[in-house]
Image 1 (cartoon, chains in turn red, brown):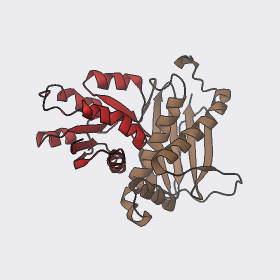
Image 2 (cartoon, helix red, strand yellow):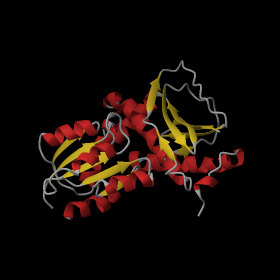
Image 3 (tube, rainbow over the protein chains, first blue to last red):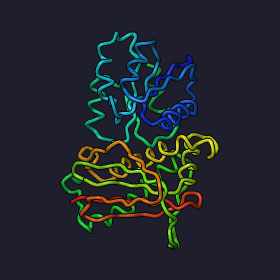
Image 4 (spheres, each protein chain N blue to C red):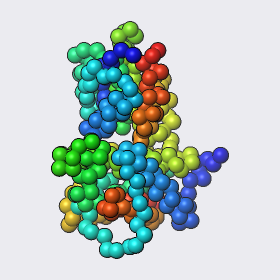
Length: 126
Length: 162
């Protein structure tokens, strides 16, 4: 698998580091990791350059994960990075909404590196 | 399968929540911190809580989940999450404690059949200092567990609104 440029969106800096560590433990080779504390910061980062994978928390202040995913649909499909939602809620309606807005999958906190591998690698291989 | 309407906040129902809360907390510490929480077998006076993390629950289950511990305990949690030494984890102490509380709340509600979609969590709030008094508007009782994290006591409580 090629080296991946990842964007990790979570209002918790500790969780962003855990997600990054879990990606590496899952065997995903990271060329670059960019971090955002909410959806608005993530959109600004995407306006500044592309990434290969986005992992995004749902429940965040300023702009939550669902609001963040919505405008991504308008982007050129070839340039659009797959989005994996990360949720503590486990709410089915949130997950269904995220998937309907174009997210490719979701991870529920707490998650193991094996679960990251199981859910993220198939998305990257598509 | 139980429907959401069967989620009960009666005193009897809350008794069955204790092991679920314990399991929810244990899983979060094992998976995210790689540490096993141990139940407290001998109740001795708890040291003053210096950090309190709170996550609100709203919907079919209303209330507040709190996690209370000392500064040293919170620093140890943050260090385990970040993979750094405890003295280097100080800036992340509040963030880590809030996130653990958030994950315990989410994991707990997901263990209550039918509740996951009918109960929303707030973003966490963390307060520090040992001279505060916590006043919840909960009027349907509290369930509380005390466990040790690497010999440090932590108190996790769910205050329930009717």
